[in-house]
Image (cartoon, rainbow, N blue to C red):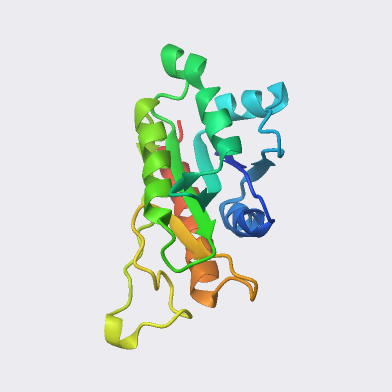
Length: 180
């Protein structure tokens, strides 16, 4: 059975909420980085054994939270040894505004995956035409690289939650297709 692992950080719990939706749809295990960004051997072992690794973080100042960056920096030995070469990878992010430079955070994840020789799973969802677009539509913000969600005080828009579920299903299907 394919093994999908998710590693993410959440400052307010909103990114974890999104990660849980993706994890459920993908039949994945979720690892939430602690507030000090420290990672445990058990998580590293699971990531090393995974067929697919998804990255998640809120977007802070145009990139992932420092706790996620600490995790990313700690992957250096795995990068050197090519331990994650040819694994599938994907990602998701949240911020309090419609844009919030979430695309920059996804670009960070894509670059991290590319450096490891991983194969990126895009969102794979069309965005609705602007004349009919509302926040209840799947991929209403027009993301391509991964899930981008608004994490405001009123909860995430329905369209963002639908995108997350569909992305989890896509990741699961591609993992089943390409896992060896």
